[in-house]
Length: 186
Image (cartoon, rainbow, N blue to C red):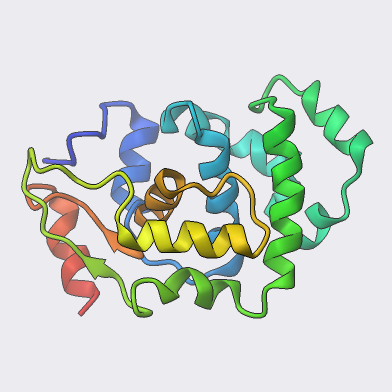
């Protein structure tokens, strides 16, 4: 079965690629979770984050923005001692900051989707095409999130985020997921 070239033969990566990546999500908790995870991924591989995802769910209170908005320094200190997650103080503090910003925004789901007109933006990249690492939608989302007080939301992170949550459908045309997701977006 043909997959996007970035998908390795790791079973966890294959499952993520085949079942989640590029599938449009409008679930607020999932969108927040993915924003947090994309921030933790900065400077690391996505597979590293995927392998720690369940530990993150436990350590980060199920990605509940209301609970995360209330955490204190002692909570951050405890997470810094947790070897099951990526222990980065700035990223942990950004999780709290982002939870507060998510809750403060009147419509965070609408904000995320506003940069693609509320619908998935279907690309038809051929194998070997240069897929942008920070297209115009990601650059605009990055600016909007930063203005709203979010951290770890640079354009490259936002590009990966928009792809992950299905705002940008960037499976290459030779990938078995391309046709199905392109068809379902119509």
